[in-house]
Image (cartoon, rainbow, N blue to C red; front, top):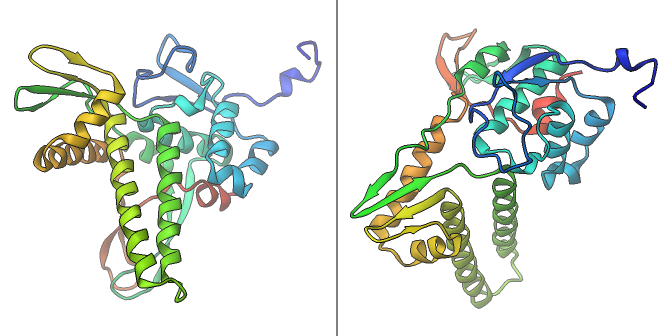
Length: 278
């Protein structure tokens, strides 16, 4: 295949992008690091477009993994991509494939008028920041060190949460008795607490005590499940606030009809984010 006379006509990098993580937090073999910290991004192929239009692949995260590995060849295992890099990669792939302009349709919250705007995705890339994972959080005599979740961890947690939400919705069935509903609600709350505890633990790299450095995930999960409520909530809020630093800021818009200023969140749902471009 390397002798194909058409090889010079294969797709080429359309843009180069810097990762918010700076290439950190990737396990060995997941990322081929470049000398200058910039990574080439190729346009999607026809197969990539088919992949992100496949419902099952979108649901289980495989579509995102396949497309990232296809379009960003330096990433060898997209399941291991730190969560802070995912949005940057998806935006960069869209720019490489369809250009930097994206049309956004919104409804004014004041007068319900439909408004259409053009968004420059290059500016959106520039606004994405990396949370600070260097400074530990102090909790009494503990020092808690954090890390980003991988795309695999994020996706697995989202799937479990989706299944629990669907199970709760099924309780609205009139054939479900009050006793069954109460028992199912109790089980669901227990599972949700377990999911939340596990997700928080995945954001913790290590906990330093006056006598030891604890980095065994099992010990961290057990500690989170047995610490007091105030400590648990403080850690949870710290992780949530840190995560918000790396999120895409909402668009600041002004209604063309009434002049109302409002914000529009941008969600990188793959089917919608790529599906409106053709």
